[in-house]
Image (cartoon, rainbow, N blue to C red; front, side, top):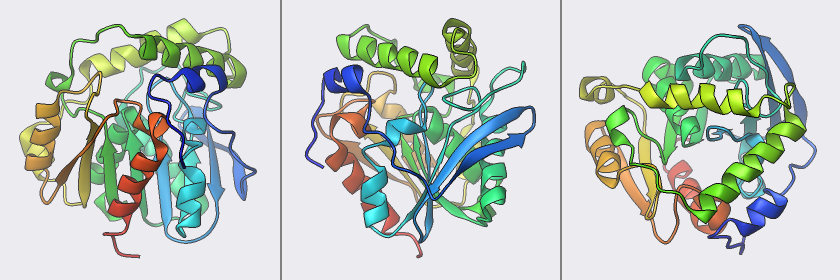
Length: 268
């Protein structure tokens, strides 16, 4: 994967590569929502959890590399994102984690490896904390686990391009295509106060974890990533050079190598 899109101009214009036909694809009725999911290939299952305001199609650069490495790849649109619906309750990471468990149950997966990006990373670590028997490991990319971990956001062209692509994709995929602004407001409210894990909460996590951050991440404090790696037992810290919060889109080869290196440390 030789793509390099540091300023997200390609993502803005075209999005991520389109997903191929899935072996299994559908919606799961769960707790007031219809959750879209898809499964590709065979092998140890890896569940890719996308970031806030995005959707599972944002993993278009990762899917084929993971399949080629012998993994079964499962994609999920978080509730209210992409093709999935939601009810009127506020967003919460715990509720979205329960949706992932429901997808695992539907697919007959007792355990899985989780690769999470931004909000998806938080969902993955909530799963590891609350349901450790279901988690083989967590690749935790570009997220905070308490509100102190975030930076003051500074406007940039790359952020504007990403937001514009999210708006366009939401209109194309959502069951409520005209509700992008209320959707952003609801997700932003969740991000403002959640998650809020204490050091004690983090130190109780007993699942292999790597904390990963782009060198130029726009949202997450580097010292917070280091704190997470120190506090979660056995966790390690990886800094991806030259990229930001959008590393899976900016330099897929770099990001995918880090994912595969971590997955290679886990039992097959």
